[in-house]
Image 1 (tube, rainbow, N blue to C red):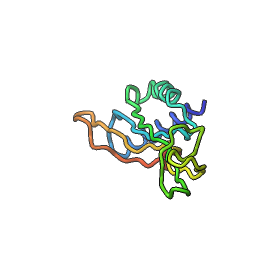
Image 2: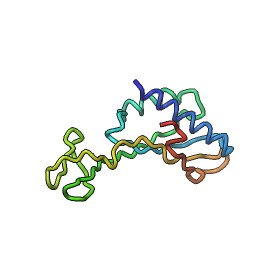
Image 3: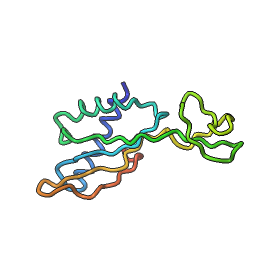
Length: 133
């Protein structure tokens, strides 16, 4: 289950950001997840909960925004959202659409950091590259 290694990487990135920002708690990690990422959402959520147990991130939320698959149709010269990832054809003209524009994402795009004596601090953006994802 590679979702566990992804969860561990997320925790490492969040811990590093906590140290850098001088805060003691992360309330939430915000991710974008595409259906073509190869990651099973529920497996990632479970793995995150297990991996965060006993760490400063225990009790934090993993907020996942699911992004749709969008392809570019060379016949229509348009980007189109497909409903079935097994059938990457243009929903308008039926043409094959091998150019995937969106849907492979596994991106950590924000952390909700909390200072120990105050309410939630502003979001700190963390690019997915920093997460090694």
